[in-house]
Image (cartoon, rainbow, N blue to C red; front, side):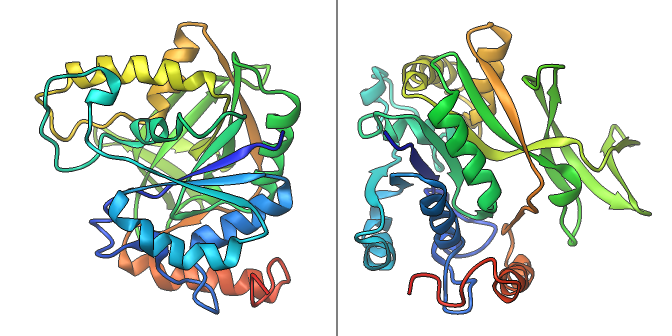
Length: 299
């Protein structure tokens, strides 16, 4: 059974100012999602599930169905504010969804095979998809999951400091913890993070999470239980978010599951602000020019 790709595409994109999930970056208006799905198909994924807001569905189908028909199975699930589906009767006011870990619960009724989760607005590269397929078809179990580890030096921005989930890895290559460093930047040929006004160095090859996780469907029940606890504990915190690393942290610290940190040498790039768009377009243009992708992706 081929694994499934879950794409997190329900975000509001408030800092970008428009729906960056379906904005065009390639030479013929290709989205970043197009390149992820292209790599996923070539790596061996059998289905793609878009996690979106329900009001996005017509736009997504119009953009992706003509390209993907006959190439890969597709499905659409909706992230919403309905808590009753999780057994929570109390109404909790939110302006934004509950976060990435809550989003993957949207796929629990359609995903029956090993799967991976990625962001819609991040470029990951073929190597990451191939390594994830290999893991999901040969190594994954209900107690052995994975995360793709990027070298931090290949994930930084030219436009300022970034936040990165720095992975601490044990001798066996498994995740011990993820520490969120909220201000990481290059300086004088080295990499630093800032904490409490002090600078600390980071090695170029330090592994970081860019939200590329591999699971089995067993994680849905675990996530649902954790989400009920999180929602109750944070009902008076409208900006609190239930992120995927919280699942990883819980499973690792409770010795319920291991996460193999699978290294990739691919360069990551993504889009957060409108100012990022020219850089992303240029990066894709270079990948087309060096033959990584055809100029017309789906011809």
